[in-house]
Image (cartoon, rainbow, N blue to C red):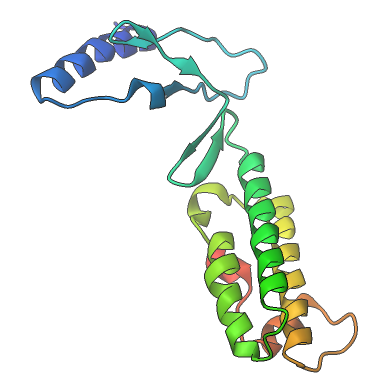
Length: 176
């Protein structure tokens, strides 16, 4: 019986044959090796395509999702949070003269919330820490939207109250 490594090496030969016989080109610079394991010292093998060694990586991006070798998605959630705060900061600066709360809400939904809601089926596995980080970003934006739109809310009102005032659903609704 073939080992997993032998099967992969044989599939390397088949991949080369399929690509050349179908006139397909493979961008080897974009190919990476990632080993998924919960072990502290997983076994690593070197793989190559067309006699070129593939780069080993512990983190890679595919379709906008950052995957790590432990599938924890900490880097992905951190990147979402940082990007959202950056985009939200741009909205605050460029929208400082806006008085229409609907315009600011539309900017928030299209530019910030869309990032918070992107592909949770892949990266969200009920990790409370991840959800809390992203809920804080949304709550910060909701407080700003209420303030700019002169929407009366009680001081230190909760996240759910801000959602109701702006007629939005929580991120958890979208994640499940």
